[in-house]
Image: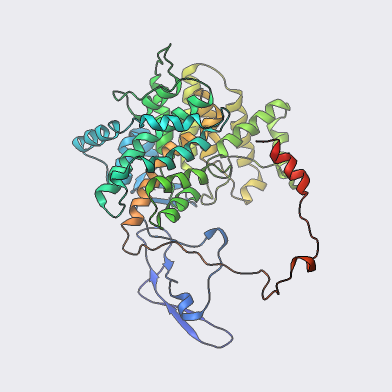
Length: 451
C-alpha cells in the first residue's frame, strides 16, 4: 500500500537516488507518480500496451480483473443490468449518480428530442457502396456531424459539451440503424419518440413502410441490457483513442469517430463476430467441441478460442455471466433449442476444467455469449459491432467530458524506445542498391481491378 512516504529509484551504477510521490486511489492499485521521471533522470519507462501505466485518473468505472468485479460509479454491473434502464445508466455515467424521477424524465425527454438526423446527412449514406460495412458508414457519418452543429463546438464551454453529448447519445442508434438499412437495401425508418431507447433502435432496424414491427418486450429488455453491459469499460482501446483525440481539443464528433474506428478491430468490438464465425466453423466441419479444444491447444494450428481471455479480467467476466443467463432465458422463452448455445456451453465447460486454460487465466468474456444472443434476436453479424458502439457511446462521452474537465488535463504525447538506424548518409538515386519489397506491376494491376 502507498502511504505518505515517497518512493526511491536508485541508479545502481552511480548510487544516485531519485524520489517520487505515491498516489492512493479510493480502490484498486495505487500508483507511483513518474511524471517528473524524465526531467529528473533523463529516462523514460517502457510499457508496451500500457499494461502497467495509469494514463489518467477517473471516477467513472472500476474493474477488479482478479475478482471479476465491474462497477459504474460504484454500482455493481449485475444490479444495473438486471434492474436499471440504459438511459438511467447513461445519466449515472455522465452525471455521477442515478437520477431522481424528475431528473430521469427530463433527461429522457432531452434525448428523445435529438434522435432525428438532419435530412442532408441522409445523402452521405448514398455515397457508400451497397456492400459497405455498417461500421465504415458510422465512422464517416459521426465525423460528419461536426459540419452540421456549429452551435455547440466550443468544447471549453460546459453547456456546449453537454448539448453535443446529448445529440450524439440520441443520434447514435439512428445512425447505426440507418447504416443497417442501407446495407440491406431497405428504406430508412425514422425514430419514433414515444418509444424507449431500445425499442426505438429495434423499430428503426426492422420496421418497413409496408409492415409495422411488433416489438417483443423480452427482445427490448435484452437489447437494453446489452447497451448497459457495453456502456463503459475503463481505459480500453477505443476509450483511450477517444481521450487521445480529445486531448488535442478536437470536437467530440471527431473524437467518437476515432473511437468507432478503434472499436472495429476484431480484438476489440469485433470479437463477438469472431465467436459466431468460430462456432459456424465447428458446425460446418462437424467438429466435436472436445476435438476443437484440442486443436486450440495445439499451438502449431494457430487456432484461437474466441471469446475467452481478456487484458484485464483474470477470472470470469461479470458481463458474460449476465449475458449467459439472458441467452438461456431467451431460448427458453422462444421454446427452441440453440445448437450454437449448446456448443458454446460445452466449450465453456471443457475450457474451465482444462489445466491449459486455467494456467493462462482464460475465462469467457462479454463477447462469448453476446454474439449468440444478438443472432437469436435476428441481428445480422455485421451489426454486432455497431450495437457495441451504440452502447459504448455514453462511456466515450463521459470519459471525454471527464478528461476535458480534469485540472491535470494536457495533450497526450507518449514517448518511445527508439531502436532504428542513426546517422546515415544520404545517397543519390544512381548510388542506391535495388531492394524492392513488393512487385509494383502486381500492385498496380490489383489497384486498377478494385476501382
